[in-house]
Length: 119
Image 1 (cartoon, rainbow, N blue to C red):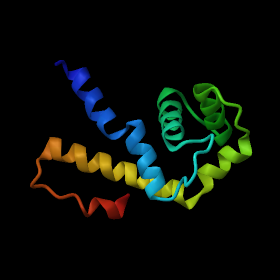
Image 2 (image 1 turned 45 degrees about the vertical axis):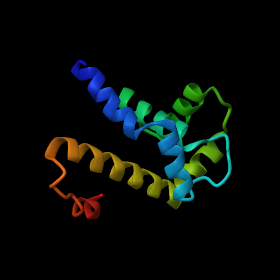
Image 3 (image 1 turned 30 degrees about the vertical axis):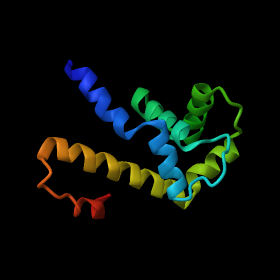
């Protein structure tokens, strides 16, 4: 297996649809199925921020609409980003990623619990 496939597997282990949607539900980001699902929102944000310079939330909204092929209006999109639960969703995803990836890089004996205070 080449290096690119290994990195892709590491990323998709953390950032897969079931995991992200499950975390979204656990932190009460979404209690019902809505047009804006946690997985689609997170993936559109990662894509937008990784692809080009984003200056406004409107840019993020345009990216979401384009990638998901939905006609979500700006206000509901903005409302999702404004939720305190959105912050919890992102913190939880970062925590899962850091925990998983640090063990692969540093080994299981290294504990990064102090890092949570920084995040």
